Image (cartoon, rainbow, N blue to C red; front, side, top):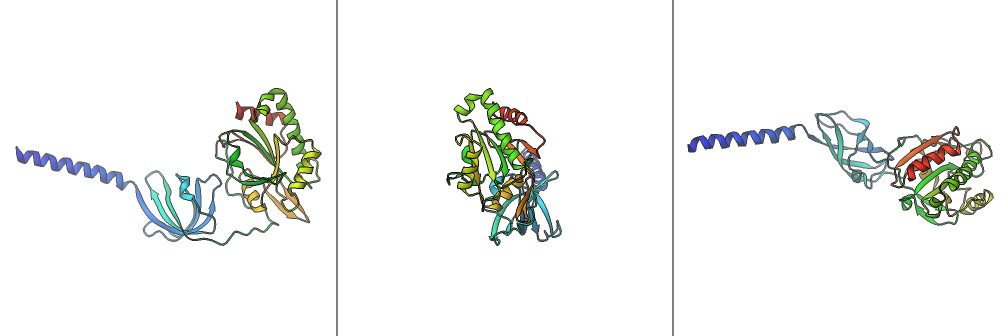
Length: 288
Ligand SMILES: [Cu+2]
């Protein structure tokens, strides 16, 4: 009797340890070391130029998924890092990263567009950015959580009517249309328009203020702001914006976006083939 029980117990132990083994066997971890090439704007992947991972992978440059964005805290392109790569049958991800050596501050040749590393899709978290507005006040975009944000990118010196002046005119029209349909949203401060300049050296707060006044902007609902060019280039790139200096002026494309009150992307309009009413529809979808 006693012996039978022992065999049963041993079998049970064996079985549980086998099951435990199976769990663990399907999830392998590797130490990973390398240099950060890029951090995705949505903080869901990191591109590493990594050393050889013995028994698993040759040295190469590739993006790795991130499940917990906290893994990327303090991690920037150029940093030397070490961490842990987890691999199961179905997927692999980086579960831990530590900066071993901070990289050099990034430089950017303004005569070339900053490469676009990641394009936001509707539903993605929009990255945060520190901005200075037309009154010289600094704020972070994340401070506008709870409001629908409608943003576009311009530079005030842009002379061509189909480009920046058109974006500004559409913002005027969209505010007029929205004011007729949803006046209470402005009264309740639920929608903010934001025109961002990618020409911070010229577009100082005073220049932005004069520009807004020229368009009769109501600054309670429409902010004009800027940031250092590299930050604006990084932020804009996640919406598909590119700009570079050429022949003493700035060449650029167009991107206009609606951000939901929870900070996620509602929609992006690229180029100028859209109407103020298209924009109003997305604002309404994001706000209601
Ligand atoms: Cu322009």
